[in-house]
Every structure is written in C-alpha cells, then in structure tokens.
Image (cartoon, rainbow, N blue to C red; front, top):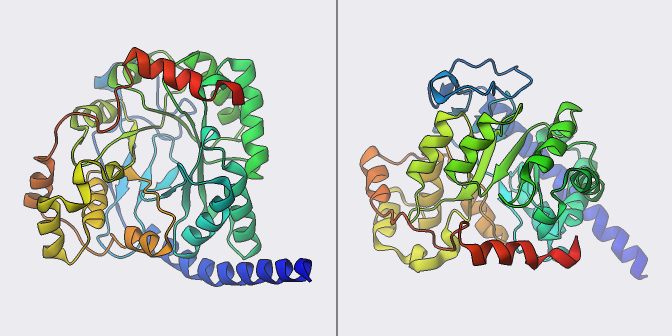
Length: 360
C-alpha cells in the first residue's frame, strides 16, 4: 500500500510540474524577444574560446556582459562574456537540508524559476538532481534550465578537482552543468581552474567562474589564465553594495552575482524604514525592492527560501522599475562593510579550509 501511495504522489508531482513548465516556458520565450543593452564598453568577440581573455589590460578588455531590459513581467537575462545567457534571477539552495531540497527546487521550478544554484559544500546536489529529473519528466527541456554548482576548497588540487567535477555531474544526474564555480579563493585555485577549464573545453561546463574572489584576486586570475572567469559570486546587499568590486568586474568583463541578497535579514534589513517607504511607493515588499535594486544594477541574484509563497514574491520583480532617485537612496545605505565576515581574515581562512575537511 505504501509503495502504491508513493507512486501516486510521484505521478501527481510530475503532472503538477508539467502544467507549470508549460507556463514557465511561455514566459521564457517572451523574455528572449526583449532587446539587450551592453553593460559596459565592449570589443572582445563573445565566440572567443578563451572567454575573451587574452592576458591584456583593462583598456583592451571588451565587455560582452549584457542585460535584457524589458521592464515587463518576464525574466531578464545576462549574457556572460562567452555568449552564454543566464537568468538574472535564480533560486539558491544554501542551507536547505538534503531531505527538503527536492521539494523546494520543484516548487521553485513550478512558479517559474529556471536558474538553480547549489554547491558541493551544500551537500544537496542529489536533491537538486532529483528535482531536475522530475521537471524533465514533466516536459521541461534541459536547455531551459540553468544549473550552477561549485567546487569546494578541499577538492582544489587539479587531479582531485577532476574527480570532484565528475562526482557533481553524477549527483546532479546531468551530462553538463551551465556554470561551475570555484567556491572560495583558497588552496590551489590555479590547479582547480585547470580542471574546470578542461571540462569547459569539453563542453561539460558551459561556463566557469569564481566565488568570493576579492578584486585583487579577480585581476590576477584574469591576467594569468587562458580562460578567464565569466562570473564572480560575492556578498551584495543594500548595506554592503560592493560598488568598487562591481567596477573592477565590469572592467574585466566579469559578471557579478549576489549571494544572500537580503543579507539573511541581518541588521534589521527587512524592517529598514528607507526600504519600507520605497516599497510602499511601488506596492512592493522590502525583499522585492532589494532584488529590483540589484537587478537594475545588472547583478544576478539567487535568493533562498523554503516557502513557496516567498518564492512567488521574490520572482515578481519584473513588473516595475525603481526610479533613479530611489536607486540612489538605496545606494546611500551602503556601509562598505560585510554583514558576515572578511575572506582575508586568517581565522576565517582556517575555518573554511577545516570545516568540511573530513567530508571531502
């Protein structure tokens, strides 16, 4: 009896996703018809196999990072420096328990998300993979999804990185991922990057990038690698706006992605009076204002929630645009200080290297 019930639940889940997939696909097609504006000056051929990096200085680096500006109610896209299109808003699964991940990702896909962000160190890649399988069985096409995962520090030596990349593909149940990132700027980053580059050249990673790299590390990586990062995923929120970091990233044609775009609600983010007043003007929540502010800056966001109603709230940010005055008002909240930690703090480095050492 239990086996029959499980089979019935699985069938119902697939039918539900099949219906939602049809709706989401229509939205994706509509958004692709919107025109793109270059985020900064550009001279590099986006078809260059080196992702546009020729070990040249900032003056000669051309940006192909583009944002689709439609101000409508459909998804907007960033074009990375190798020509790959990425939704500007995705769904992150950081700190979501493995047993909850499949349900959460299925919910996210059902309400329109197509970009999913996971990582080896989240220990929930298999749950993401199970949700993807269900979505594909429901009628969604693989190319409609954008899947990101990340290589953890303890897998950075090149030979170990190659095996770990294979393991991520296995857990996700995929032949390729759309974006693979180095999760932290420690250990043998160059060896790990060679491994990612091999998978990229083989077409098994459609794009490769980094996470938590400070501007000096980005410049070093761009100038000293055949293939440069397409993207850097870093902390960004109204209280830590990262304007200087974004300027460097634009200079080197590297897209910026925000983790914890709400700062996990720290420093009373959701009850901030300035953000609240701006939200009232547009009949939007503080969360929606924060996401819209980052999207209008050309920053990719991956908010996380386990509640379906909040997933819906977070994705409903394409039917309004903040005024320039409101953009500047939010910018004035910047404290230029992390709400979490300093990745250059020796104790933080030690903590991150040791935290999962026994699991990899």
